[in-house]
Length: 435
Image (tube, rainbow, N blue to C red; front, side, top):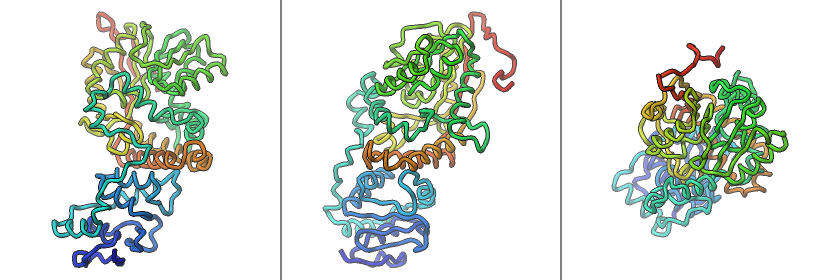
């Protein structure tokens, strides 16, 4: 391949284009970061604080043969693409700069020139990195999506990475859901404790009550409630989470009040709970399953019992996947929609929605805290799970933070009550958790 320095005005006249010229040909406006490649070409401001370096032809193949962000993610996870000017544990500044990179379809003539420049070998898709799960369409075609078996496999893919890894990334709270910051300068641990306090108060829990916490993770809400005299059953599809949570319950001497089961939430037989908390589960169950999901919850509550549903949402009510990178590397089978769809689904099964709020900015701050932990503990995290998996997590969390910052995704808490036979709820007239 002829090595050419990029020139945004004459790429169409080159017989064979360099990697940098190909990037110039498929973008509009100036490239807002420095791009360099294995063929010696470069584009973008020389003094840009952040940059990308394409190390290998295989990396070019990943990018050329996979749509959207999937190809770049594959190249980065495989080690064929390096990030410059940022730590791999927190690439947020570079991703924010890339958010200003605008792509456009090349003309047919330019597309043919790009294809000739890449050559047949580079247009053959390389095998994806081993961290990648089956694509969404394959899982759907195989009839597995949201069966109990498939849900267990999806949760295992994400949550059974390593408890030690999660301890290093999540910090002492071992809480993998959006925190609620009481003040701008509150620590992540203070904010996670405040989130549990908010859920507890919204559910009007008191000593002697019974709580079901579905999708309970490492049992943070379970133990918070049990410390206050509430009897709690938690359920998680992650075996490692259940083991860690049960050990934490024993360490705190909460065995008489708290239990975390390695179980599908649909297999919980007990009923008559005063409250159900679902914190970070709805993203995994699929929009078409909302009616059965909320009917199940309603069946577990006594009349007057409360539900708090806390989950990631979209700013509109369209049913959308989480995107190719998230679906294959992070949350297989994940699906998001807007808070309006969730509220409607709760209302349609007969529960009354009493309150909802959006904690979008809080999740951006939560993710910033997790990235800070990953960066701080990078060497130990890499030793525990390998550099490729650690790269996945840095990319995923920083990208998610950008999504919350830019209102691509939101986080909603929805509070609902199971009414009595005569429509009575027995609740105060105004929000009691704000008193």
